[in-house]
Length: 129
Ligand code: MN
Image (tube, rainbow, N blue to C red):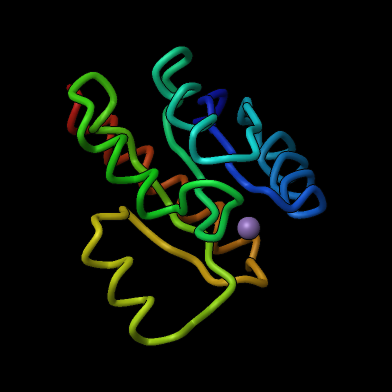
C-alpha cells in the first residue's frame, strides 16, 4: 500500500528533506511544512493520511500542535507520529500522555519509521471500513 499523503512538519531542513526522500521512495506522497501552525492549516486544507510531527518547533511545539488538531472534529482522527530529539523520561511520558499514535527519537531509524507508518495507516484503514 502506498500513495497515501504524509504531512511532514519539521523545522530542520536536512531532516525534512531526508524524510521526504525516504517517504517518496517508499511510494508515499508528501507535503512539507516547517511550523506547527502551518501543520494545522495544512491538515485542514489538504487532510493527510498521517502526520510526522517534530516536537521542537519555532512557534507552538509538537504537543500544542497535536492538541489543536485533536480539538478539531474534522481532522482529529488522523494518526500523528512525534519525532523528538530528546529521550528525557519526563518528556517521553508527557508525549505518551498527550495522545500521539507513535513516537520516535532522533536519529531516526528509517526502517522503524516506515514500519510504524505502514502499521498506523493499515490500522486507520481498518477502522474506516
Ligand atoms: Mn525541530
